[in-house]
Length: 208
Figure 1 (cartoon, rainbow, N blue to C red):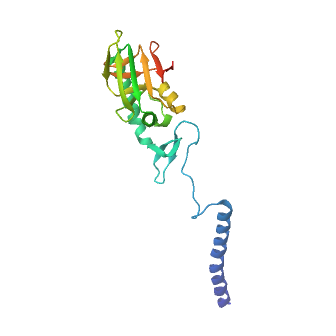
Figure 2: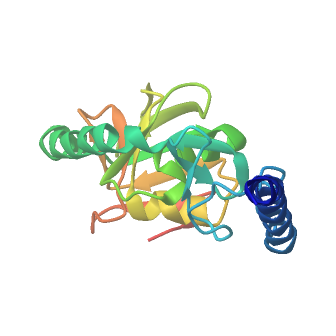
Figure 3: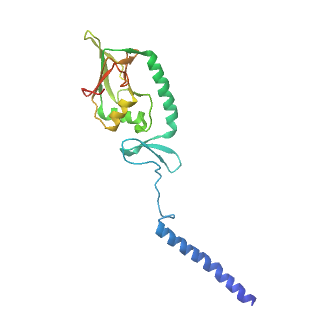
């Protein structure tokens, strides 16, 4: 009797895991789960024109360019960049002076890329975005009421509405001009579409 009991227990030891393994494999085959399957890390929507959040394999959150999923920025940087933008906007209110006319010649691909990077592909809403240097900008000049022109800084500022208009429409911008606008210390253009006195022109066409 004791021998029969031991034999029965041995049979159960081998049979139950085998059955469990069988049902597990069957479930995985039906549901598509298991070690051989892959799952998306994306936790945000795809499509549209604005950046979205996804999580990488290490658990880090990224803000993805909706036009190129291989282009992204770390979400961790948003807070510090937002604070910088807020302080910069406050400074501009105190240092910007009125200018008669300003025009900037832009490098289309580089400029659009910078607008995307600075705005996290439209995911954030900062008061101002700074576009810097020779990669996106060929140069800027100002013109006073007498018609005298002078070269000025090759950086510029954009407000959120203008930046999103350019980004959402993926515009090829070659010139950005402004009448009766403002510039930081009269030197760095501030293309601010919320300024009721300023007239802004994109590729020669009036924006606001």
